[in-house]
Length: 414
Image (tube, rainbow, N blue to C red; front, side, top):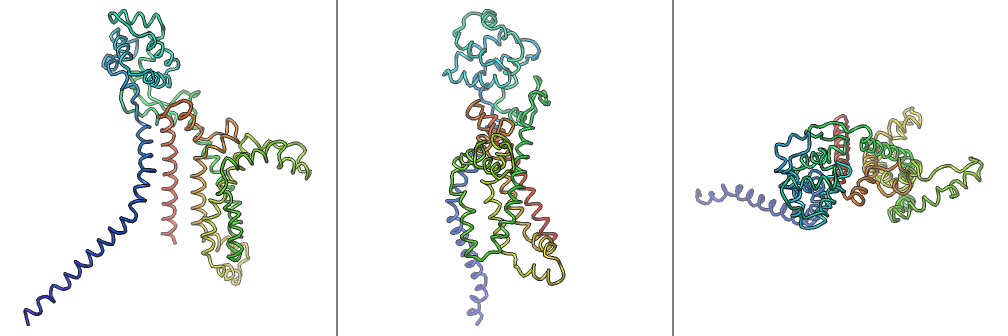
């Protein structure tokens, strides 16, 4: 009997092990199903973001092109022009560059800090080769361009000798490093991105508020309709998703121009005597962005409103509350999750808008994404473009963090 009961004592442990192995297999099976999506997100989202953040602090142009010059400048006081050995080292580094495009990249990088540096560097590159002792090379460079005898360009070379730099990120918030490496505010006439960032947030906030004011009653009306009618009308809400942004912007240009349908309609009704300025200003930008982003506000609101039982309002009215008071005290608080989700979605999409402000706005209506595109396509300054992109990414993550924190606080209070 003792021998027969021995397997029974071990049966629970064996069962637990079997259940544990089955659970592990289930988890691995679930992981294998999600693995393609994880790989896709890694390659299309996380890797580009990591590359963007790296390029925002990477500074390879000077370090790669002028290694001997950096060694010659080691110990230089950065006040007056450097010794003749630095001139000879600079010429030697330029002569060792494998291609003219490398000299061009170096010239653009230095020109972003010292105006005129591009012509100086490319002029020296065209005059190669230089021969003779360092003093003769120095004299030849000074004869070709006296600015080589001034300290600003040499300071820029010495400051950018490291492969990694905070300069792009500092410039994105109107800060800079001085000749000695100390962080300071840019001169007032050079401060631009602080105002551009505030403008981006202001336009995005206005668009979000207008979308909420327009989308909330529309979502409430759709949620109160029978399912068949609501589904038909929801198609009209989703129509903008099926139309190209460029087509919609072009349509708004036709509608909002001085002789467009909107102005002619208002004048035909006698509401205005002269055409309103609705194009190439902030008004046109807001109108077009609201039209494009309105579905992103309606859909979260509609999904939340459909889950609110209509009996709550009837119960509040039956207990003596007025319909308006019952709506704002009983119904609206239950739609706060939809308001938060829709507002966050619209705001995050709005701060990254480029096409609509570029085509419908004026010079004072361009948002931060416009300057990211400019630094990428026109200035060919990838470091500055990535720094501005990192600034937008940080703002987006901050907004999402605030939203999550507010949601958790609301749940704890509830």
